[in-house]
Amino acid sequence: MIKLPLIALLVFCALYGWRQRSLSPIVGFVTPLTCVVGIVLVVRPDWSSDAARLLGVGRGADLVLYIWTAITILVLANVHFRLRAQHAMITLLTRQITIIEARRPPTDA
Amino acid sequence: MWIVIPGFNEARIISNTLASVGAWLPNVIVVDDGSSDDTAGQAARAGAHVLRHPINLGQGAALGTGIRYALLQQAEFIVTFDADGQHRPEDITVLLEAAQEQGADVVLGSRFLGRASNLPTSRRLLLKLATAYTRLTTGLSLTDAHNGLRLFTRKAAEQLQFRQNRMAHASEMLEWLGSSGLRIFEAPVNIVYTEYSLAKGQTVFSSFNILWDLWLGRLYQ
Image (cartoon, rainbow over all chains, first blue to last red; front, side, top):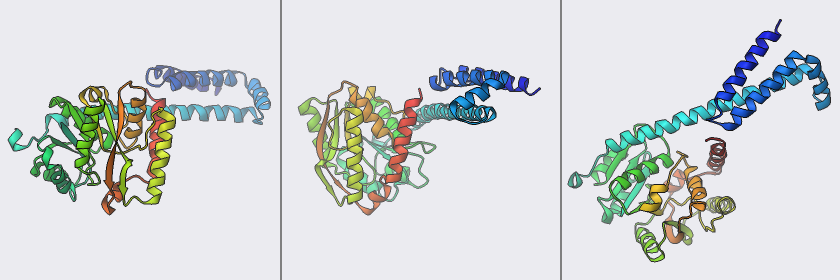
């Protein structure tokens, strides 16, 4: 029962990540890729157990949790980059306002 | 020739700094980076052009604003000069002569080709490490890094863009200069450290912040 909402959430994350590729190629490509791996592991949990054993993680559930953590970190990184982009725009805007409102020396006015 | 002085809460010293560069007035631009004190008022009374950021953005952003304004005033040479009184006004002439005699696009002041008075050993070590890092990452054979006394010709200033608003702008600028194809020279300058300027300067901790900003900036487009 929980598989469907999980898959929906992962698809949403994959689409969100893909839409960010113009802002940050790393987030734009790694997030969807990670989500696809997550979806595969939700659909076939036995594969996650096999993969977990192969990777030395222990349980398949732990592996899925780690993947989810990785996605969360990537989304957070993307939020950070978005904030930086906003800050760059604020800087440009502030610069324009500052120059328009420049105070010139009386002899130079 | 225009001089750009970025400042944040420098009301205590900006009048003295502007008096020292009095020969260059009124071609002096003070960029008050959102100070909560009377930096802007004092600079205006001293006869400088005053640009006031409504919010604090950082030294890199303040320099960007000042340089942009200087270009709009048709500046042919732009010198950046610290507000905290550690630079000597006569070194502006040294930079200008170096630019004109060497045909340089950018002249960077070097306290290690000149003299650094009252420089604590820990700060000297930090600056040497920063210089070594700059040599490694930019390919520029510099003797100093992060010296606020620099000269840009109009050609160089028009190409210059600061993406780093805060202190990482100095490293970012050197990285850009390393691949810009511009003619870059160093000139000896003398810096006199005071208790005030040392308190305003960089620490080991802020160096980590600079590196963090630079590395994050590389991930970002």
